[in-house]
Length: 305
Ligand SMILES: NC(=O)c1ccc[n+]([C@@H]2O[C@H](COP(=O)([O-])OP(=O)(O)OC[C@H]3O[C@@H](n4cnc5c(N)ncnc54)[C@H](O)[C@@H]3O)[C@@H](O)[C@H]2O)c1
Image (cartoon, rainbow, N blue to C red):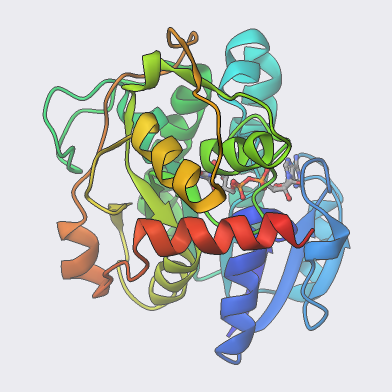
């Protein structure tokens, strides 16, 4: 199958591209390299350096005529979304609309959309949060992504563009930047490797659901042929405090210091973990990587950089 992956030079996108190519698919990448990196581009994929918001995207669709689109390109920084909501909406809403319009014009069969489980649900009233819970985003990033979920539903209704919405919780693993604004595991590893005391927000008690990037890439491959018209969580189903992540890393790295504890920042939620029952039922997907093994791999990757 010929698949266009937006954001294919990014952390998750590059793993998705590698998995698609390993499965024998033809892959085209669209990325503006704003947070992605040329080093992460799979050499067997064709790369178009462009912005999803630009009219130039139409040329890519016209030339490449993809059968499916996996749309991962996004502004993913929660705090930037709160500080610059128009910029966030420009990339995440208008950019996504441009992708969807081009899907319809060029006859794409299916779009797979990466939505952030944590940011879309807000502070859940029930745990684990499942897809029937009413999403109530508490940051602009979550609100923008949720609105795109609605547009995607609308495009299927109006134009018969099939979709699967995958709501990832906290994705971690090799290639996530230790210098970015998202990705607590890599940020902690980066700080601890340089001997700096990390700050744990929510006083270390903030609960998240950590899922390994390789497991996400497997689900993105399953979604090419399954899960049409569905929204589903991709998660471990386990709540882990940031303090627990710190403690595992402290042991792996023999880190001598204690963390600094601070309150949550604007837009951040206190506790979330999600149900993966629907993804198991619809996609046949079960995450395989244990947290400890996944963190060890992430540490080795960052050490090797
Ligand atoms: N990292 C997580 O824990 C997580 C959780 C839930 C959902 N997601 C979603 O997964 C997707 C990928 O996230 P990631 O963690 O790999 O982030 P990332 O920043 O590594 O990847 C995003 C990619 O999109 C590209 N990009 C950004 N704006 C663009 C634009 N206007 N035009 C073209 N390309 C653009 C960037 O250069 C980058 O390569 C995003 O849609 C994000 O919302 C991530």
